Length: 328
Image 1 (cartoon, rainbow, N blue to C red):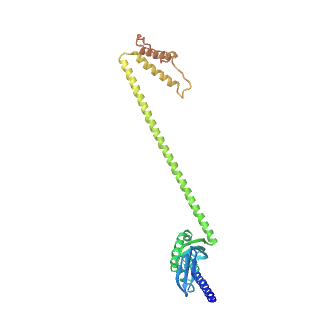
Image 2: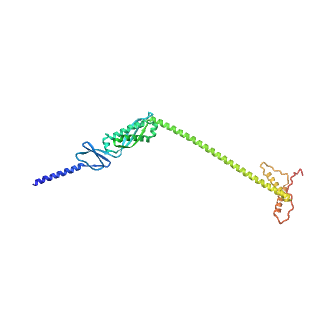
Image 3: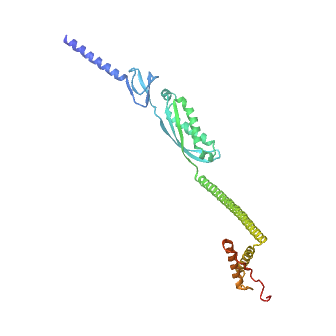
């Protein structure tokens, strides 16, 4: 009896161990960033997502372990002949990501190699349809065309081409030298044009400045002439008023006004004669006392004018004797 119980205990222990082994065999832990395909008897059944998953032990197995993160594929250098028959060397990089694990696992054999060859073939096709100058100046257009073509071709494989970049475009050495000479000639041409344009602008500004200066000078002369004419006009008006006043005084019989007028003209004439620029020697055919007498006459006229309380002074002739000694 005890031996029967002992054998049954061993059976239960063995059964429990087998159950635990089966459970562990059906547990699959998928790391983050990966997907596992499950096959049953060689046929695809389902895809395991990251985390803890359970499968049917001994019937299901993991078929492919696929990296679902974005990956970088280096495109090796290759020779390309452009549309204008220039041979260049170009390389690049491709970024892709698996979006559908079953198609990436079962629609193509060697997904990475397929994308690499597809990219290299389209680089030759796209660059071969362009001239060298267009090729060197339109990298963004080349990248966009490559991305569109390669992404459309890789879509049935469950892969998404996120970016294609051309790294280096290397023309031959002799072609680089020719391009350098052409660029130097073009820059020299632009420099000459800019220098000529600068000289032209400088001459224009200089001419504008001279024109403005002449205009301002002419306006200054016009203003000066206007003011000179106005001054002469006012002087003439003053002279006319003075003459009119003397004339009125003569009409009224005022001898002092006549003497004042004649004496003033006499002194002014003597002043102009003495300050002449061409006059080096001054010969006066007159007596010096005549000028003094004229000044005294002016003083008497002023005194008689402003002295209202005094008696009217006796008029004294202030006109000098202008006759020469020979005539006397």
